[in-house]
Image 1 (tube, each protein chain N blue to C red):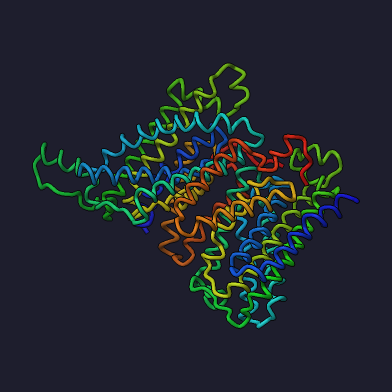
Image 2: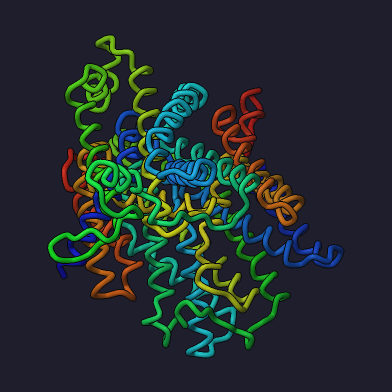
Amino acid sequence: MTYALVAGVLFGLYFSLVGIGLNLVFGVMRIVNLAHGDMLMLGAFIAVGVVGVFGIDPLFAVPLAFVVFVLAGLLLYWVLVPRLQGSANPEMLSIILFFGLSQVIEAVTTIFAGTSERSIQSRLLGTVFTTIKVKWFGGKAGGAGPIQILGQGFPAPWVIAAVTSLIAIGLVYLYLYRTRLGTLTRAVMSRRDEALATGIDVDRVSAAAFGIGLGLAAVAGVFAPFMFGSVTPAFGADATVTSFAIVVLGSLGNPLGTALGGVVYGVFYMLVQTYLSSWADLLPYVLLILILLLRPSGLLGRRVRVA
Amino acid sequence: MPDTSKHLLFILAPLVVVFAVLPGVYQNHLLLFNFVIFLILAQGVNIIYGFTGYLPFGYVGFFGAGAYGFAIMVMHLQTPAPLAVLVGGVVAVALGLLLTPLLRLSGAYFAIANLAASLAVLHFVANPALENITKGPYGVSLTGTFNPTDAYYAAIAVLALTLGGVVYLKNSAFGLALQAVREDAVSASMAGVNVVKMRVIAWLASALVAGLAGGIYAWYVSVFYPDNVFSSDFSIFAIVFALFGGVATIIGPIVGVLILYGIYNLIGFTTPQYFQLIYGLLIMGLVLFLPAGLVSLATRRGWNVP
């Protein structure tokens, strides 16, 4: 029981990181980024590449993935979004547009990387910490063993992923509530038209949010090989559905709700897997539908249901 | 001649006749069958998305429910295949009724909830705990009713029915009311349109055709697994085909299926990843440059496209 709860919280924090980028993009632009899971997949491939080429701790892939994808996001934004928002029904068409993008990404990755599964030895993650520990305090070199929490051992990558997620969510919070661009972002989220009317450069704010959303997805992707065992180019589609479940659970359009949604999802998932394993696959979806119907605004959020 | 009979005579009749005659001259019957199935599904998507604006991202849920309705009738009650196909349609309508509350959601919320619903049905059917009823993840084998020829003609009959439905929507006050609801539900209800009833009818009609198609698919292939009949490819192909041609028209989805599924069969089997690339680029180009589908090339010039 304790094990399931703590593992649920660890996974949940990671799931929050998985979902938060999707939510930021939807909240600001009302765009459903169906290629979100593919960004995760590409982030995972960056991690695999960093380990394969340099043989260093995959944690170094985190800043690299973030920067690369923020830039890619800005570029992609200017190519796709203004044209999309000029159309009759951007919210619906975005689903289809980004589905097309996800197909392109998946196809290109398959052409270059093949369909084989990629994984990273989990002891490589966090070697930077043990190296520092050895240098400063002495002791044994090598990978980090299981980490003890409440008397139970958990794989070190889970804990590292959860801590990174917490830091990332904290940074998103600081961005949204303590910077000027973040304040403008929240203004655009709550009333796009009025923000435009008050002279906010909505395009610039949206581009920033889009870049950050993609960057966060790629960071989450760096940990995907550890959390899910391995990744293939086709991994993106499943990741997208999971992210949606988390985001809707929290509240679509409220990035901080996602943190709560992720933890609730993680704990729920672990509990179901422990006690009702044959129904575990079904429950996230049923939960998602029930939440949409009973409290469509998510656990924290404004009313969104129309008609 | 009124538009309805024109559409029936010049669109529905030729298409049905061509597909009824083709097996005699073209050897790849499976390919023809798949074309007919996708024509039905694309028109089913057209009914719900084109005329009401709800994007059914989990449309395959009805298709799979129809296939399993068929399989369960045949396995447990030994019903004759045509009757089991009808039961498949009824099962899909029942699922549609169960999911009517989803129509309260709007836009992306509906699409996501519908996707989740189809995945929930998949995991329900594939659950090993229900092995006695659905055979769980191990798949069903219905060799007793295997009869591809009859199944093919049944599919053509369903195609005719579906096209007839779309012709009716295109030319009737009911279809016009639906489109009014799609554009502005509040104004439509002020004008005396019963919004909820209209949407539910369109929703159930589109569930029915997908369920019938699913039942016939089960009849035709006779051996399948939950992952085959609940594959999200069905939803996505049907949606993309319909959109590519142009929704809320009769010929749009037909054109979409013939062109895109044709390309798929030319290059998709040998090099699936290159097809996926082309397909993804086509979809993106479509949304960015032709959001109303291929037919908008004609409507922009002021031609009337049925």
